[in-house]
Length: 137
Image (cartoon, rainbow, N blue to C red; front, side, top):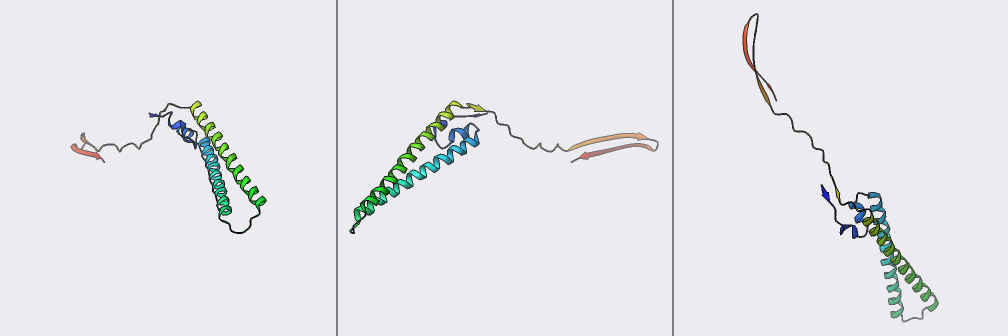
């Protein structure tokens, strides 16, 4: 018997779904949250790169273009971070709502070979009696 933990069901990225045996949903949450996290991190890096480039520039910069790019990077970061939070909370709530406290696990094992046997044989027939041993290995 395998006991499950409610603490694991509170971990994002599909951990609770995997624990509950819902692998399809687990992979869906894992992939969605990973993609949103990567998008959020990438857009934050782009935003910081734009600010760094603007602050170090010694040549004139098209401010309207810079402002547009900076605003786009900020909005992508904000939306992807918010979506990540919503999807992660949805996954945690789902894992808690469908929590499976324990699972009986059955394992199949090959049967061991039968033990060797020795059987005594005693008998008689028209030509006389006989005494012997037969074995199975």
